[in-house]
Amino acid sequence: MKKTILFRHIFLTIFMLFFSFFLVSCGKKNSDVTKRVVIQDTKEDGDFKLIKIDNKWYIGGLVEAEKEEIVIPSTIDVYGIWKKAFCDKKEYIGYNNPPEVKDYYNDTLKKVTIEKQFKSIGEEAFYGCRKLEKVVLPESITELCDGAFLNCESLEEINIPNKVARIDGFCFFGCINLKEIDLSNHDKLTYIGKGAFADCYSLTKALLPENITVIMEDTFLGCRSIKKMIIPKKVTIIEERAFNCCECDFIILGKIRKIGSVSFAGVGFGTRIYFKGSKDDWSKIVIYHIDPLTDKVVYKKVNMEDFKNYTCFYSEKRPTSDSYNYWHYVDGEPYIWS
Image: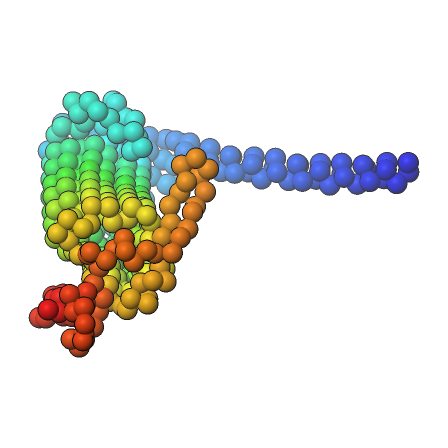
């Protein structure tokens, strides 16, 4: 009996200590979140409404919404652009459930030039600015946050500075007039988030940075105008639907370890995967999918038969047999041995 009572006492003591620690941790976390979003003060400076958060001033919006062009000058005393600063707030829903009524979108803004040396474009900062055509960013930018230019339907031209290390999820989702993205010289860029360029229907050229290791799910979902996609050497994982409906040729330079089961859905209709490796390398790839009933990840070895009609393997010399299954470079372009 004494042992039982002692055990209960020890158990209750440990439980209460753990529960107290949990409450303190949650309370601290929640207080931190609350602190981050409390607006301490507001004011106006030229064309801009400013908000003060954590004793730092941010651009929170425009004084006059009906402007076709804005310039954020280097002289303005702000730390950065706050989230949703220029998006339409009249019918804001969020990028996981984009508005269907386009009349609520910002229907005026066409050009943005940022001269101030910011490091980050805030979350959904230009969300739904559907007439925005051109954005000029300062070289100081290191991060483009979630949904920063989501559903900017008219966006055709934007410079992505070489210091950018992150392009977060849904950043350019629905930019249906964006035609070209060249990130090949962005050696600091190591992360491109989920759905970052999804539904960019007019995108014909997309060059990826050399230092990414994972191509996230839905990254180029629906980018049906891309002609060729080069998968950098360091990429080892291609997640679900990464290139779904991209009916282009793929050149895979590295040794991929995992591929989502529908990463290349749509491939096979006149397109090819040029794998710069051997059949043995390809056979080691693991295919995975998420079971919709259990939410568990299910793995299986790649089935060569599933890819045989449109996958070619690299060979510098002409193979003695099955030459149509092998490729090499001719003037910098992939060419199948015949």
